[in-house]
Amino acid sequence: MRRVGGDLDVFGISNLLQMLSGGQVHGIVTVSKGPQKKSIQFLPGAIRLVSGVRRTNPLGEILVRGGTLTPEQLADLLERQKKTGQRLGDLVVDLGILRKESLEAALREQVAEEIYELFTWTDATFEFTETLEDPPASEQGPLAGVLLDSNIMSLMIEAARRMDELEKIRSVIPDERLIPKQVELPVSFDDLGLDPKAVEEVLPLADGSRSIVRIIDESLYPRFTVLRTLYGLSERGILKIRDQGVAEGPVTVIGRRSQAPGADGRAGGRGKVLVVSELATFRAALSWFLRNEGYSVVEGKGWDSWAESLCQECVSAVVLDISMESDDSLAVCERLRSLTKIPFIVLSSNASKKAMANAMRSGARHVLVKPLNERLLSERLGELLAAPAPAAGND
Image 1 (tube, rainbow, N blue to C red):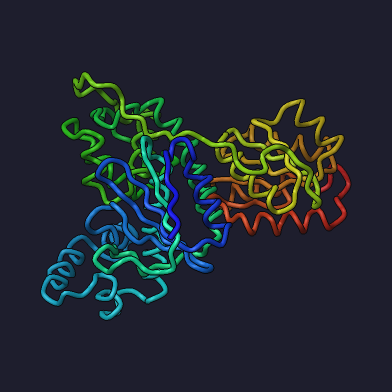
Image 2: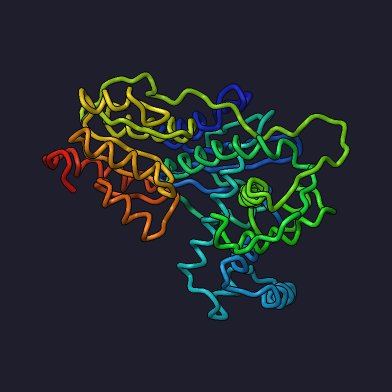
C-alpha cells in the first residue's frame, strides 16, 4: 500500500486534484487543517467525499433556501427523522416532497461546496493512500454515497473563480471576526446585483451584534455566499463593517496559486485562443483546461491595444469574460467585432435575457453563463474554428 503526503500549501490543491483525477489512481486523499479533515476517494471513473466538515444539516439548508421546504417543515422533518432514524434525503423522497433526481442534485451541491472550501485552506497537509478498499463505515460521512465524475475540471474552474472573487472580498473583509451593521435600508433587493434570497437571509443577521463568523454559522447559505453577500452590501453602502477589538492579526483564507500544468504556452493543434479576464486565477484555470483540450492559449487581463493586435495577427478565436452589465462591456464587444473577423464567445455572470441579447447584438457568437460548463465552451470553440468566419462588421 503506497502512501504519499506533504504540505498542501507547497504542492497546491489544484495540482493535487488534477494529478489524482487524471492519473487513473485508486485511493483516498485526506486533507488536514488542525482538527479539521476531509477525505476524498478516487474510484474508476468517479470520486466521492468520504468525510467532510460541513455543518450538521446542510441538506436541510439547501432545501429551505431553494424553496423546497419552509423552516417549519424542516423542523417537523427533523423531529420525524429522530423517531424513525431515516436519513433526511430518504425521508423527503419517501414523502414525495422531492424526486430522487432532485435529491441527488442537492447532494452533489453539498459535495461541491465541501471541495470548494478546500481551496481556501492554508497551513494544511495531505496524505494519499493508494488502495481499492473502502474505508470502514464508521469513518464515512453522510455524503459518502454521492459519486461525482472523476473529471473535476468544472469544480476546478468554479473554485478558481471563487478564489479570484475572495481576493476582492478580502479587501473589505480582511477578518471574519469583524462585525457588520446595516446603516441604510436598500430601496430594492433587485437593484443590488446579488442573489435577493441571500440578501433577505443575511441582511437581518447584520444587526451590529454578530461577527461575520457567527453570521456564517447562523445562515442557511454556504460561507462563500455569505461573504459575497456581505461584501456586495458593504460596497453599496448598505452595511458598515467595524472591528470587534481583537488584537490578533487578520484571518487569511486566500490560498497560494500554483502554476497549472501546460501553462508554458506550448502550441496546440486546434487553433490559438485569446482568453481575456480580469480574474487571474479563473483565467489561469480556464487556460489550463483549453490547453489540455488541444488549443494554444494566450492570456490577457483586459481588452487593450495588445489584445487587438493579437486578434489582427495570429488569434483564431477570443473567449471574453465580462459582466455585460455596462455600456463599456458592450463597447468592447462592438470594437472586437468591427476591428477583426475573429469570432468571440462571451462568458458572463449575468444570466438575464436582455444581457445575453445585447451581447449577441454586439457581435458575440455565443454567450455562456457562469458557473461555466467548460465542456460546452470547448464544443462551441470547436464549432467556431471549424466554420468560416463572417465578414468584419456583420452580425
